[in-house]
Length: 274
Image (cartoon, rainbow, N blue to C red; front, side, top):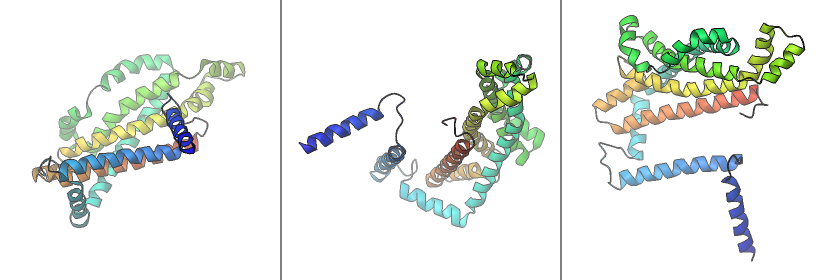
């Protein structure tokens, strides 16, 4: 009888987790995330160790770890990782410095939005990789070219998303501020920016993830260092172990930066529920 009751309780608990928008406890969230990675590695191991996929197309997990260790200890891959991180954050910070103030201005003043929005909407659909030939002509194949690829890929997305966020500020907050005697500029400083700040921070977190895709594209062409450069060299050698290791390193760095960004956002905006 007790076993039946426990089983019924487990089913009810599992059913609560499957309800739409129902929050999941932190422990269960971590367990579910780890379970996915465990299943993924198990499927990868089955496909490779079981002989279903040839090593030339997909290295097994053990080979990938061994090749990664060689990269780190013999080929200075840590230096490549550091260079790629610098490029991502350098281009992203440049884009943020330009995009956030302009996005706030577009969201706050409709005349500014009318002036910039058609061009920003047009430019955000242009793939950053399409600018690489021009950027190589203008800036060479050095660091400036790679920073500009990330800048172009991120800046227009941030501008439009910040503008939409600011423009959706609750109108009752604005009207209440005017009733209390706030000026037009005071509305922007004391109402629109504070109300939008949590979502702007979340926008930056999302776009930082996109910046990682742009840096790899930039490093695939005309680069002598970085994770993308290592991946291209490994492709020429048909070394899928090193290719997969590079991809996993990118994912791990992105995951760590995402968690850090979330932690900072929660600390800065504890009321937002981010």
